[in-house]
Image 1 (cartoon, rainbow, N blue to C red):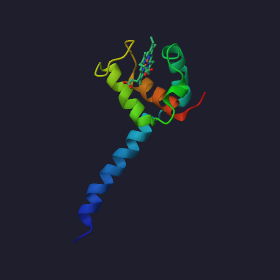
Image 2: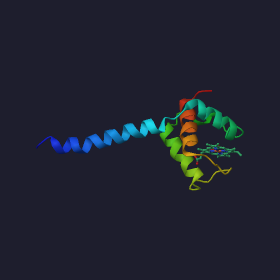
Image 3: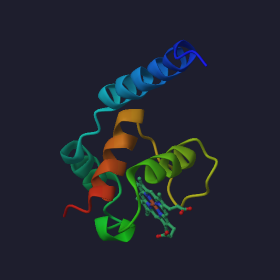
Length: 93
Ligand code: HEC
């Protein structure tokens, strides 16, 4: 087996992951402000103990997209979604 094909496949995947992480740059403090402004009337940060940021993020995305039923209509930008998910997953008060 030659080593070349593996490098060709792995490198773009690594790069894509890196770029996504940087572009995302979820901001826990911004998430805290957004959650307090828009979600805290019904949710507390401890509601989500043990949830990971990625699963919370995709759950909130599904709510915003109308795929998951939710009590209130959520109107959030993709950045707000990842920030709130990061804040709730971090478990910061
Ligand atoms: C008017 C009250 C209200 C507001 C405001 C609210 N929620 Fe909810 N949300 C609920 C209720 C009620 C449930 C269902 C019961 C529960 O899981 O607590 C829920 C459930 C959820 C769930 C879990 C859904 C599931 O199917 O597991 C997520 C995630 C969520 N809300 C995110 C948010 C986010 C993010 C915000 C703010 C941008 C927000 N909610 C604002 C009332 C609200």
